[in-house]
Image (cartoon, rainbow, N blue to C red; front, side, top):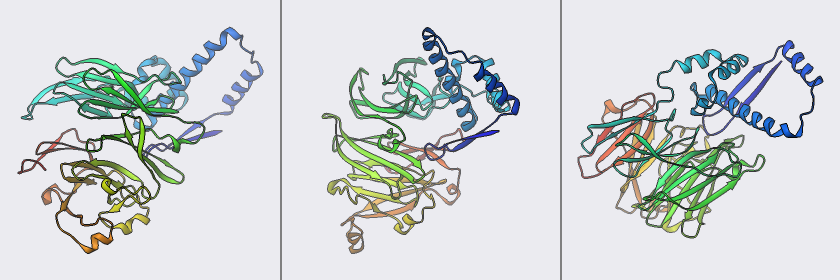
Length: 420
């Protein structure tokens, strides 16, 4: 007898676990059921605790299947328990391969000074650092989607200075989905370990004391689309608003939610529901007074002008809008970021640079951009095109930092001007 369990969360987290039971296994469990003795009341808490541990252990094995690596919470279990369970599910070879990986539990953070000379490297408790934000030359906030709590790391001394957690209703772990900041505040998107609740906590950036909580969601039943955790946080200083965005893949396609939070009142100023060509990645630009996204289906760049925000039809395509209806997932893996008055969008191993041009156009007026015109250029020389897929783009002054899939080096692109 075979039981198949399918999981689908996010864009690339779909997999199927096949569990094979022999006839002897079925008979053994049937005998256990016939000889079952109801537990005493004073044993119920112990049983609940054991069941909770088993569920966590099973999630460790699922993470091993999905990523090929053991998550950090595998440390909570005895190695013999992991070996026994991996043998039962027929994934012992995968466990051995993961345990033989020298990088297991050793995600590293390396800091550089302004001249880009190597400064210091520290080991972390994370398997992978999914979110990271430097808020001073020596202090970094780091978190992971499979590790509880946001860690404040002291790079100079190589220690965890403080760990920030969210006390959720289920009393389970609180994993970090996104980090953002303003000049005075630190924003953290948390999700409960059971993935049935999430929230955004606001901290004072200097004292790290919690100021307030916004966007608290509890998910009931299968209604996950109503309470998506924020996986990207962007501060829009010109409007004093925090953009929180998240998306989910389901049978009906990719659905997304974008909210602009007024932190002072704790209320939502604007909200967008994404259905048609939902964003794969999204950002905001103060200089352009705009919100920008790359569509998951079309792979094209879209702009929403915040000065004349239309919640019904906010998006204007800067590229080929005929791709919107093709539903070919051309935006899969694309990244979009803004720096100054320019927009950078990665497609595969290439980077598109979008710049606003100061001129009028009848055509663009018909397109909904008014007198705004944007021009696209491919960055780099011919030899730079077509490299490995880009995973991160970050900016500082006149430099852009790029990381690529399956590569451990960081590319540094430098503009001849003062800034990009």
